[in-house]
Amino acid sequence: MHHRQVYSFTYIQFFIYRDLVAVQSCSLLLTVYDVIYKAIQNPEQGYTNPNSILPRTPDQVKTLLNLS
Image (cartoon, rainbow, N blue to C red; front, side, top):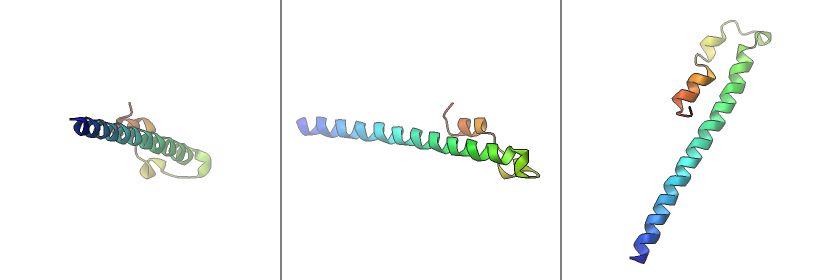
């Protein structure tokens, strides 16, 4: 029984860490996307149609990544 309890605890920890890494990775991705999005939307950068490059806003990406 003791081995089964240790296995269950390890199994639960794996999923907790997996979920934590997934959330942190998505948050980092969103941060980078936001920086790039703002740079492309900046008129000084000279992009004639920035929405064709990144058609989704950072808020839309946040929703798609289930971070809202």
